[in-house]
Each structure stands twice: as structure tokens, then as C-alpha cells.
Length: 211
Image 1 (cartoon, one colour):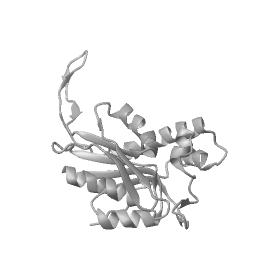
Image 2 (image 1 turned 45 degrees about the vertical axis):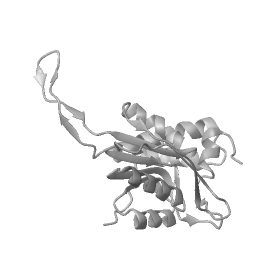
Image 3 (image 1 turned 90 degrees about the horizontal axis):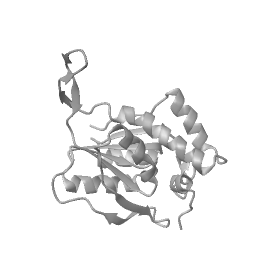
Image 4 (image 1 turned 60 degrees about the horizontal axis):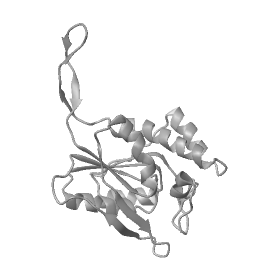
């Protein structure tokens, strides 16, 4: 069954989202705001991780405790997805990071893979695809296809903005994948950019326009 995508009305998310939408926000402030948004959003994305009992000895006595018991894989779609990795690693330092290199052909708007080093076996328990923008959905679907081939049973997508077209495409191809974004925008324009959007996330995060 297809799941409704999760988006947040948290006041801090609304605040920092406005900052990154502003075309006059400099790169360092844009990057810092993206990190803060990723941290806030990650609390929702990671809210259903499983834990196991792990008693702990405090200075006073032994009491009940819990520890994460799943292998978590972060799968950033390069290059813009790299901007979402570090905030999650601050929360789960032991998470594994598996990079996927995909770029969108500007003529066909289809994803082109240029880097992929997922192993042949021992998949993680849960994989989170990271990309600030879910536009056409092509790159997210390509990433989820790669994770399915790896054998990952539970997948999620985490991003900043999404277009309805991209959401529908991913839900159709991978109905069991949870989608978490800060905001669902209006539509895609004729060159595949999210409107109102924030421009090219990779260019703005790294202060370097890609060719």
C-alpha cells in the first residue's frame, strides 16, 4: 500500500526552509540551514528504529536501558545528497555511508549513473536515500532499485523539497518506501525544476555550479 509522504510544520523547519529558499542567502548560511533542517527532519525519519534491552549501571544503581540494534545505511545521491549526511552521522555515528553517483540528463531528465559501489551481499537492515530535492523522482527510483538489488528490505527517502510528480513516481515504483520531506511544493517547470523551489541544491550547498 502506498504511504502518504511525511512533511513537517515544525516552526524551526519553516524558519530555515524560508532561509534556503531566499535567492540572496549566501552559500555558508544555506549550507548551515540545510544541516539544521536535516537534523530536525532526521528525528522523524529515525523515529521507528528498533532497540534492544541493554541494562546500564548508573552511579546509583543498575537500571533498564536500550540500544539500537539495526544496521543503518545512509545512501546520499551525489553530489547534493552529501549535504545531508553529516547531520545524521552526528545522531548515529555508527551508520554506514554508501555513495551513489547519479546526475540528470538535462535533455531527457533521466538519471545517469556514474558511480556505485554497493557490495554484493550483507545488506543493511534499513537504508535511507538522501537527496535534498525529489523532483522527477528518477534519481530516487534508480537509487531504490540499486538498494533492492543489494537486498535491503526497508528503505526510506529523506529530502528537503519534493514535487508532486516525483512523489507520485516513487510511490508507484516503490509503494512501501517511506518518504520524508520538509515541504511538498507546487509543481515541476518545463526543465524539471521544483517550483517555487530553491534553485539547484548542489550548486548552493557547495557554492560551485556544476557543468
